[in-house]
Length: 495
Image (cartoon, rainbow, N blue to C red; front, side):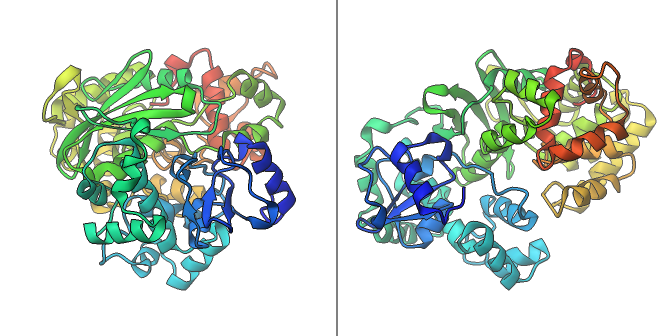
């Protein structure tokens, strides 16, 4: 929807249309507050409304977040993805803390992206309506506000967890923005405590419905590594390794709030943004599922599959190196065999957790640990051992190997330059580890089987690639629908 069309935007907030939650924010000039379109407050007059495509843009325009509809809990939709790879990469880096701290600035961020500072600022203004610093500040404030209202963390720890350089700056920001100290926001949210748990911090991450939770758990469950991950009928659990410290996360579904609930048990609150970002990636909560489904349904075959599983997501990977190792070990073997090999590697080279409770006893090995391991003990063929060795050496030499850089073609080319990494493996790594929405491992046997259902003849990889041109930029979701429809999915080769 064109945000310049004021009448259309106003109809959205009049009807409280949930489809635009996370895509549209309304600033109310008479109050200085910005809201989600689903805000329960009385609809303001049109002449008092300004409309914005992101919370950052609304905040940059001088509005403060509404305390009733809580913009920090809106779905973090990724509808802008595909419009600018540079913006996409920059946002991923900002989420990882690239602009946190006095030593980190926009110039350094632009340099990491291979851009000029002025060009990066222009792209942010074009696609998000705000500067990189404003985006980082808004993320920081909204995450802090969520921690205040959904947990019992002390304010000093909230400041650390949300990336503020000091408690003083944290207090000043909230006093300026909300005209009250942070503690006042908590006192007003006593009934909304989602995260009072002695075993960890619990937060809600909202999504745009529908969400096919069963398919997500089924996908992750078939690939769960013993000691590292556990998947039951209603939850996902795994160990976490961050800056040498270990902990756990547990994810459950909260359909009544269109959200997933994440319980984080980790000794350092400064790791919370990174952990939350990883959970978002694995469970794909930022997908603009309505836009994706509408686009894919233009193809007759995919229309049937989308109707069958309208909330299907593209599961991401917890860690790029972990996923790449699993993809290499999964070449030419079944999902079950790949999982067994991954479990064997973990038992052989992975570290242990600090508590080891409930069967979560190991963490996936780091590149350094894999480099020093005796890979021959895995029983892999010599070519795969050499590929693992090359992958590990590349990951050690390039810490940014599994960050989004450039287009999907550039990402695949970069990964394919590693000896032993072919087109299928590169696309699969890009799909899950880099969250590339247009990645498409066309040679996958499961995709080819499902794609031939409507013609009763299995296509070649080239045929499937040609057909998939109309599925862009959402080919990763098309792949997920085809995999889900494949009757031989448990025997497929994607790890």
